[in-house]
Length: 345
Image 1 (tube, rainbow, N blue to C red):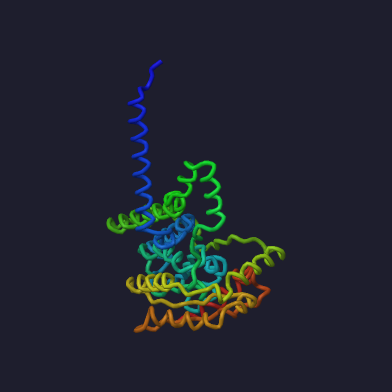
Image 2 (tube, rainbow, N blue to C red):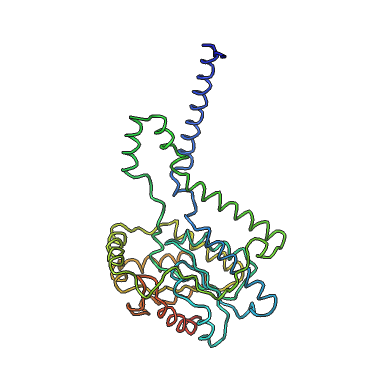
């Protein structure tokens, strides 16, 4: 049996301490330079929706090449879950006096920073309709960011530090606390690189995304006409707190994200309109009177020299046609889709 000499053991321990000290310095440097994840991460996102956006646009690109879609007779609606749930492309087309083809692209989330991530798929595509409507909610100005480390996490770290100091150092490190943010950022950077290569070499969307079989389908995530009553009550209680005027502050980051989305679309030669999507009356009652004024000020800041049409449909749908407080049920989707085409500029 080979024994490690005392001198050799001391060398190994010294090297381990040096590596640990170096890693600690790196972690401190990352904390100092980047701060908590919300200060540098674009926003959380769902890769599944980026894939769905890409697949739908790949299908539209193919349909344009065979004349089923005419680029000059196309309207795109870009937004989050209410666009995804509230609009039916076939109903829109059938109700449209101009017989446009409609491209519905709805992701998931509650902020303009999140919408900007999904919008990159559209902005990087060769599909360029004359008009793009952003289906949004004013409350997206506030945004919903990753929660910072909370009190329970700090208490946990204190407890672990007392009993298991090495584990506490790992769990409390910047890299560990921001591991989800780092993974999301790496995924987003990889996607941007793919987009850049595709555009550089003039490759079709299908080179990156599998074309969707039915680009007119509705990506609904909800079943039935109405959410369960107890779940709906719990949702309302949560929103009473989260939408309280005292807890909401317009985020410059969200205003900037909306501005970048609009600028990117206009740089592609597209006209942009805003659709304020329907809200349930109980949610509208929770909104601060200052919300509308803040939103109009944000639009004036974003687009001072060019008109930005705003179609206000917040109170356009009766409460019984909502699945929950934001998303319409199937009948509501049909009725809302039937009335929207006549309202666009």
